[in-house]
Image (cartoon, rainbow, N blue to C red):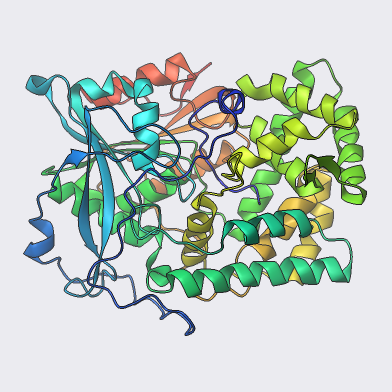
Length: 520
């Protein structure tokens, strides 16, 4: 599993204590409506051009959601009675709004202070592929103040969970790939196996989810957001996007600048970076976070990095046996990366590394399982399927193995731990993908939009701080308002009291901080 942009909303430590439960979708598993049957053998059709689609018919904009008690999600207990779930229909292809539709799953908790209600506040927790229907009820305590004046609304983006969720392979296929595919191939045979597995993953998506696969772009989801806004009865979209959700928020602002209400983008994806650029940013970001962790434990970053590199080389030669499974180099890398998403998890990294050096891979494997959505029974959720489908529908770039290998010397220089892993990821992620991507970089310029808060954390490993600077600039003068959080971790709201206070004031009172405001 590659290190992709993920938002770890709940503490990793707590999940491990609870037994590493899956973070899978909690949305109803509704099938697409009024759509042709899923492709089984044929290559999926290419999506229509995304520019300037026709107006949506009244049958869609006039929908009224039927809010009902939510079912129990795959990942845990059913949300409390204050939460209600519903679905709305959106066009499969926004260029053909009178054609086939798919459902988008929603969850809502109504504002507690109805007399001062502002409207609906929609959330996207990242991924891409995170289920808002699952996550928001579990994380809602963090947004308690906002829930006084806003209806808190989570949704599964198209291709996720209850919104025609993409499925690409079964549990056995996923387990076999994790056990056998080397994510930093060193030989021609390992390279061939790596690329073959990536192509097989895409082919599986086409067989199982061919109908929706071409239409899982972020721009299509942004258009869904505007339809949801209308269906919920809001004049403007109020939105809180984290991690990949910042890309979705920027895309929405670009497409619908006049409909922007109060938008916050936290842990920001650089809208100017291409595939290699994102990999380069993450190589720098994860090494930066690792260096900060090593310093916090009194270690020299260079010596500590070499210690971890030696461990990974050993695992590449001889994986550690953990029960009936093995901790491979790739799974260990994933486990290490997970802990760098938040400073609260650094003590767990110390424990995991010390165990591995003594010959036990249990904790690192648990960490990797959490990230990879594998529960203790061996069942995998499908966030990684949705994640790849959305990423590859968005990006028109298809780097080759030769191009990935050319990046390795530079990336290893930036990070001996993560460099080769992330260089290879550029080629493996969308290799032989069955659908063409939309463009090389997303569009985020939003002239005329209301001010948008752009929050970047200086120690963020997955979406390095520089991306927030680029997003604020891309949104445009007077639109993107940069707020800097001097700290660690992926996302600032809820961990930085200063950022939390400023975001709350913006959402609740409309108070826009000065550009360049710094917290920490």
